[in-house]
Structure formats: C-alpha cells, structure tokens
Image (cartoon, rainbow, N blue to C red; front, side):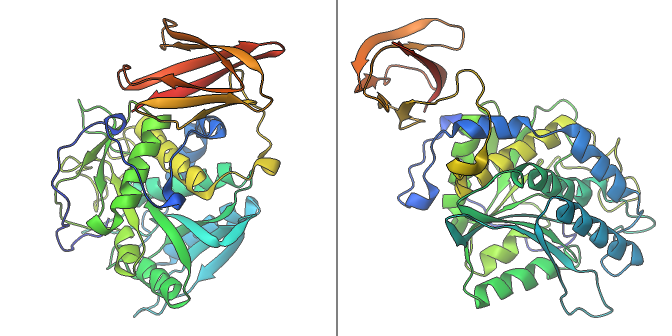
Length: 397
C-alpha cells in the first residue's frame, strides 16, 4: 500500500454481511447469477501454491522499484505468467532514477476479446529503514494474482482477462497510473479492476472478512463483488471501510474513468508491520486461510464477469452440478423459475442445507416456485424424474 496519500472518501453506510444485501444492476454486463463451474474453480485455490510465492518474493529482502532486486522479481513474475501459456508484456514506464517494469499478462477472450476484466497487485516494496521484505505489502497480493492466473489460464472465457503486476506503487501509484492512462488513451474497454493489496494479516481475535474500499463511481462493481461473494462465499462478510491513510492501484483506474475496487484486509486493524523489516511470513502474513478467501472472492468475480466459454472450459461436474435443470434468477428473493432443457416432468423438492424439505411440487418442463417465505441463505433444489436426478444450489437473498 502506498505509504502516504489522500484520505479516501467512502460512502457512509452500515456494514452488513454480503449475503444480506440485494443489488440489482441495470447494466447487463454486471448481472449476477450462479455459475456452477465457479464453485469448482474457487476450490482450486491452494495455499501450497501461493504461500511459496509469498516466501520467494519476500526473500529478495527488498523490491524497491529502482533496486536490482525489483528487476529480479519482475523477471520471476514474468516467468510465472509465461509458464502458464499467457501472453506477457514488460511495460516500461519513464520514472526518474530508472525503475522496474509493469508485468502484464493476458488471457484473450473467445467471444468479445475487446472487453477486458482486470486483476492486479503491486510487487514493489518499501521500508522506512532497513530491509523491505514486503510479505503482506504486497507479496501477498502479487501471489494472489499469480494464483488466479494459474487457475483461470487452464480454461477459456468470453471476455479477456488481464493479470497485472505493477511497480512503483509505493512511491505514488506510478506503474498503475501509467497503465491506466495508456488504456484510456487507447479506448480500452475495461469492465472492472479488482485489486489485491495486503491480504494476509488477520487481527488476532477477528473473523475473516474484508473491508471494501471503493469510490462512489465504482459502486456498480463494488455491489457486483458483494453479490458474487454472497453466492460462493456466503460466510465471507464484506463491510464498508472507514477512511484510512494510504491508497492503492485501484485509484489509478478510477481516475481514468474505469471502475476499480480494493477489498482490504481490515481498517484500521491492518498489519502493523508493513514498511518495516518485520513484514514477513509469521508476524505479518499470519493467516494463509484469509489470503485464500480473498483470492477465492476475486477469482469468483473475475470468472463471473469474464463469462466461462462453455464449449471449452472442460470442467468435469461434481455430483449435483446442473446439467439439464435451470433455476433463474439465482440468487432470488421472491419467485424462481425451475425448468429442464428437455421439457420433462419432474418432482421438485426444495430443502435446507440440513436436508429438511420445505417445498414439494411437480413441474412439467417449466414452472415457478414461491421462495418469498424463506430466510436469506443457501438451499438446494432436488429435481427427479425419468432418467434424471439433479440438485441445484440456490441462494435466497
């Protein structure tokens, strides 16, 4: 996180859990629905993959943007992206005294490649004195970007996904400002930027949650994140952040007319070790499980917004994943439509997560089910008939 910056101006609303909010975007590009494969994708996030990356980046002892170690880190990140088969660019930007480059990797979309979804972090580090291992700030975020790239690069999406590792964030958001400015000049259609910056420190005694930092101009993307997290991580609380000192790369995107959001580890109880020689795994990155949850949330948003390209994703469905049965809308608050693609007659049973039957009905082809009486939460819709038996996970808003 940049060390000194303007206080953020945030909307002052009460913090509530993600699954308790109900946002309806009028923009079809930000519609939220349950995508079964995303449940599988977030399960691929592996602490055994991203924690070694944090350890590697921390071992440079400093990644100050102008240092030889930053160049080494830059090239290592480039190698990680290239090993995944991504198209990678080292984006040089002018800065006094010289600097390391932005590392930009692209997974081209299969349908509308001119529409882009971005995720990023800064890989440079800073210390007030001595070494700057920067484990939480921001080896944790950079490793998060590499982890989502590792997973998503195995599949195909309708829109292009861009994975960014920015340099010189700590001295004024320089790398991301250069990137966002160029993107705006070129007329690049960026639907949203999801930021990773400090995702590994959990204040002792607290539960895993995120404090969402975003300007009002990015409310649509912020609400999208809240609703997506409510589906795939229903216990993950997304709270409104208090104003804090410091800033991060999402601001560069917002300053150039794009929407950027910053799910932050905690305000005001973020790591007390940042910008010191103690920003290491252990004291500063003390919760791999929290980092995993942050990565899962951003991954779910990226996959949802980029839209899986069904003919090539190739995930083998788990038992219970939808094949014929469609439930729409999902999440919903009042009434849902339940249908199957072959017009079959089916017995429909809606149950709680404990197996309690709450609704039983018979539907031929397509019908509706009243869910207005349900409490917000997760339910299952079991559909059975001749040669079919499927279960759909349903979210009540």
